[in-house]
Image (cartoon, rainbow, N blue to C red):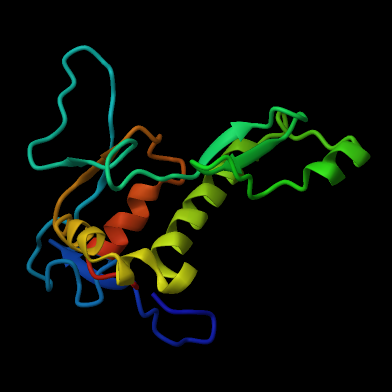
Length: 176
């Protein structure tokens, strides 16, 4: 994988899984070309008989890995927003929404976009804000490192953004 200017992507590499090239998040290739399987995200289900695969780790709320940023329908206006565990909202200027009559709750893609913003905020918390939690919180960093090579389970639909993707990238050699 490369950027538009043809410089190599520092996070993603190509790894061979049998005869198929697969984009991996490990800088060294997820299996060194040996045909191993890259850890993946699994959607938890409440379906009768469903069991989490052996060795998979649940990373949703309220675990240490849970994303503190969640998508909500704003309580003051018909907009989709992202809120953290302290009640701080992040993506909507509510005063402006009130003035303009902005409403996006029914807009196609609004909820998926907001989920993406919640995941982006989580990634920023772990890797950027104040130097990044992964860098400065040793017990958390060790917990993330313990996820290397393991499938991660969360309730997010597989076709939607999820904080487990951030954890997979960090645990398996991605940028930190």
